[in-house]
Length: 171
Image (tube, rainbow, N blue to C red; front, side, top):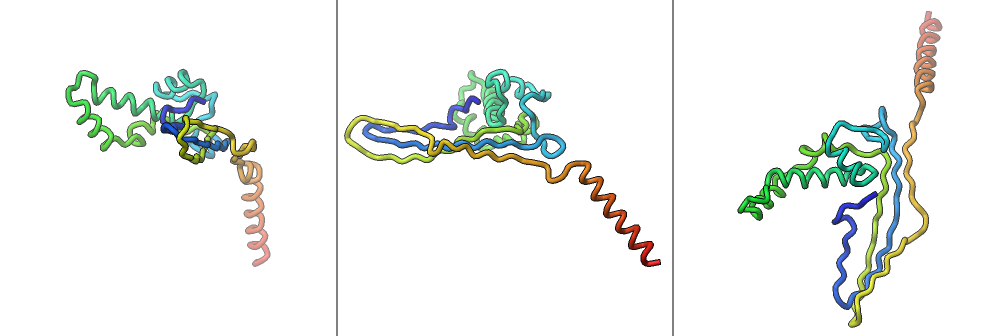
């Protein structure tokens, strides 16, 4: 997993002591037919998908979306453009990445998310940062099917059997 540049930025000013507590959550989502997500070993017909896998070794939708936004910006605001700031402002105001990137960047089935909380203390000495896991426990959220295909067929058959009995009983 390679985080995007802005994902974990914390600024420390001179004379500050910063404590950063991390927590880790692992999400395991069911693939097809339950969700429209991509397993890590699956292939997807998208250049952005392949670029993201190649550069990060593991596919993450957030990285693919970042690549998509960068590609769209480069296409719409070329380096030779004299009005780069105006182009950037128009691009950021009008860009809807779900519409432009959604079909090229599917959601992954298995993902890891790091959350953090930070506290800043002001001192007159040098800047220091303590970064640690708040707890060594990892929260793991796993989707499981409520019933199997066999259970579904059995329930339908049982329900039809009850209706047949009610029909015979009423005669």
